[in-house]
Length: 597
Image 1 (cartoon, rainbow, N blue to C red):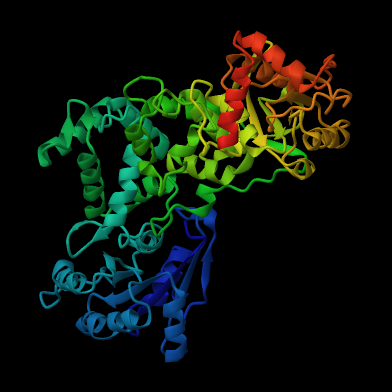
Image 2 (image 1 turned 180 degrees about the vertical axis):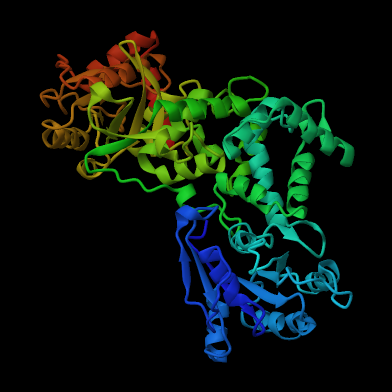
C-alpha cells in the first residue's frame, strides 16, 4: 500500500479546477476563487483508505511549463478537468493534456472530470458517453470519468475518491484493457491465493473454504444465500466454474475478472494485499521476512503454533495418507514456492525418512526445526509462500519463539558432535535419524535431527557436526558428544582437549568408536582418564541407548556420566562382540568398510 497519494488537477483555464478543491475543503461553493489553490493535505484518518492524500492545483497563469512537467512526474494520479459546457475543453483532453501526460509519465493513471454538470444541458453538447468513451478507448491510462458540480457539491468527494482509488487499487497491473482479460501476473497471484485456501487440495473451494477465505480477506463470512448467488453467477456464465466439490480455479479467476470489469478493483486488491502482494504483484519483503532480532546466547525454535501449522500442512499434502511425502507430494507442496527448499537427496542423512527415502512427519518437522535454528529466513519464506496466518496476524513471528539456552524450558536440544574422523561422525549422525538405512560414502550432513522423549516430554534433538574451535562461536549447545578412537593417541588427545575446553560450560558424553588401524596397541590409552560409558557400532540398534543418554544429558547437564573401568580398544571390542552376539571379526568387517571408503 502506498504511504500517501498525490493528486494533480489539470485542465484548461476556467474549467473549475480550483473551485473543485475549495468546494471539497470548505463543503461550499466559494464566493471568491483565486487563480490557484494552495496544496491541500487530507489526513489519513478522514480518507476512505486511511492514506494521507495531497491535492495539487495547477494554474497556467502562475506556473510555467517546467513546473507543470515536474508536477506531472511527481504526482500519483492526474485529474484532467473539463467543462461540460465547453466543447473546446473536451477536445483539448486528447489534443493536448493526455499526450502531454503520456510523454512525461507513461501509464500514469488519469481520471476525467466533467465539471459544471449543474448547467442546463443543450442539444449541442455531447452526452458523457459520447464525449468520453472514444477517449477511454484511445487512452487506456484513463481509469474512469466522473461528472460533478463544484457549485452544487454534486459528486465532489467521489472525484477524489476515484482518484485515490486509481492509485491504491490500480487496474493496470491486474487487467489488460486491450484483451479484456486478467494479466498473467494477476492470474499467478490469484492462483496462489486459491491454492493456499484449498485446504484439502481437491482443486476446488468448498463452502467452508470459501467462507474461511471471505473471513480472512473481508472479516465477515458470506451469508448462505449470498454464497449460492455467487456460485450460481459463475455456473451460469462459465462451464466448469463450479463442480460438486465447489468453486474451481477458473471460476475463482472469473469472479475477479467480473469485479475488475465492473470497476471493483478494490475487491481484488484487498485479496492480493491480504496475501502479501505489492502494487507490482510481488510478495512484499516485509511479508516474506518480518524483522526479528535473536540476542546473543539465544536460539530460535518453532512455537507450538508453528509446529501445529507445519503438521497441518504435512497432512494436507500427504494425500495418500501413508505418513510420508512422496516425490509428487513434495512437488505439489513446493508449487507455491519459487524453488525447492530442500535437496531430497540430503534429507535421508539429516532427518527421518521412509523406506523409499521420503520424509516422514517427524522428518518434515525436524527439517524446519533445523532451519529455525540456523536459517530462519528460509523458514519465514516457506511459511509466507503458503499463506501462513494465525488468528488476525499474518506475520510468521507467531510461528517461532526466541529462547535462552535453558534445557528445562526448551523444546529443542542442540548437541555438538566432535571427533577427528568425519566419516565416523557421519555414520553416527546417520544412525541417529535413519538406523534402518545403510549409510553411504556421500552420507555426510552437517545436521541430524529427530524427536526424542526425555522423561515423558517430547523434544527435538539436533546433532551438529562441529569442530572443537567452533563450539564457543556457534549457536549455543546444550551438550556435546565426543567420538573417541581409543587406539589413536591423536584421537585421545583431541578428546582431552575437548574435555578441558568444554568441561566447565558444556556437558560432554564420550563415546568410543571403532579404530582406524588394524594393529591395536593395547597400551595406547589405558590411563587417559576419559569417562567412556558407551560404544558406538555402526548398524547396531543398541546405539539408540547412546542417543537417549545424550538427550538426558542435554536436558539435565548435572548427570554424572561415570567412569568406565577400562576403555582400551581390546576391552571395547570384546564388549561389542558380546552385545551383538557375533565374533570379534565383525568389528574388523566394519573397519574394512570404513577403511575402503
